[in-house]
Image (cartoon, rainbow, N blue to C red; front, side):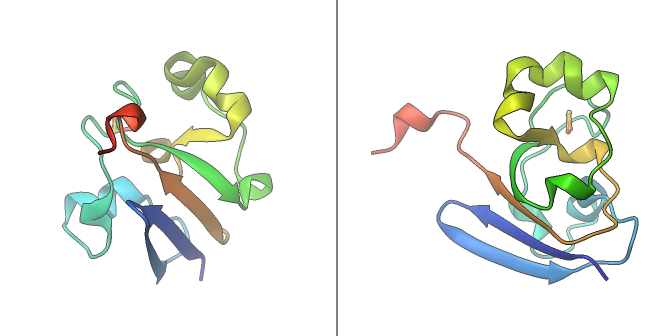
Length: 104
Ligand code: FES
């Protein structure tokens, strides 16, 4: 079972998920802790779900055309669209604020 470690707003959430889990689907059914995951379209069109992969990127498939289009150079910084990922292996992700400069 893939172990997902998710960092958001300084908090760390961990959950074992079934193989082939999509975290945006988990968020969509309000499965804790995934309501903490920001997403919108679920279709690779908005990049709201973008997360930086801290560990486990080597197990992911190469970015698809939607990720390449939405993320551009952020791909090289380790970002992926989690709505486009069906997880098979352990992974550690961070979802940063949409406006990092706005921290008070
Ligand atoms: S939720 Fe819109 S791109 Fe992933």
